[in-house]
Length: 265
Image (tube, rainbow, N blue to C red; front, side, top):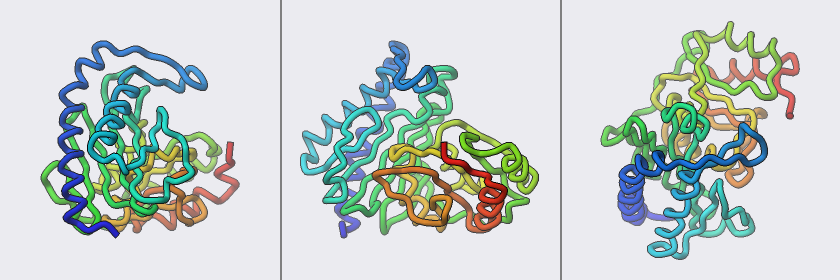
């Protein structure tokens, strides 16, 4: 296991890099070039690509033994459970960036021999940075976060994407909860669970880079992070994903799975 002092040294350099990205971002957005991948809703920009390239260059120079598993490239998975592996989504919420220039973030997680040890969710538009260091703590900017209080589903705002969920299940979730919200960036929807603003976020088809940071945040804040069968999620594969306050997890999952609620697309 990596000791805390070593993690803090890595963290210092990552914070410097994140600050550099914040400085460069306005100019990158001003010159933004939009492309599509699988379909017209699957967007990528030069902002995504430039940030990932910048991170790769920094790793190559300063942490050459570290591996990168990024959304835009670097998809060789053969050795990702060995040594240091970074999982990066350079822009989570690309559609929000393109359509709103708001509600997007960077997701970054470091794993050592398959275990999460450092995590970051950087909400660029609002200058909010969530950070977790294994054995040290969880922070929002410079303020240490405590685990959110447990709340029943009836008192919780919930967040989910509707792909693969039938109408009856979605209505049952809405009826059982206090209300529904969706930001449309998995990192930001998840961060609302960190702070207790949301009770749960559900993503029916999360990619590894959508959730690479959430493993450590969930562990250190006493949250539930599982697949829909209450099992662990493989950080290399992703898949259906829940991050939840413990107080509403069981009831939410029961509703989600009854009546054939989730059907894999």
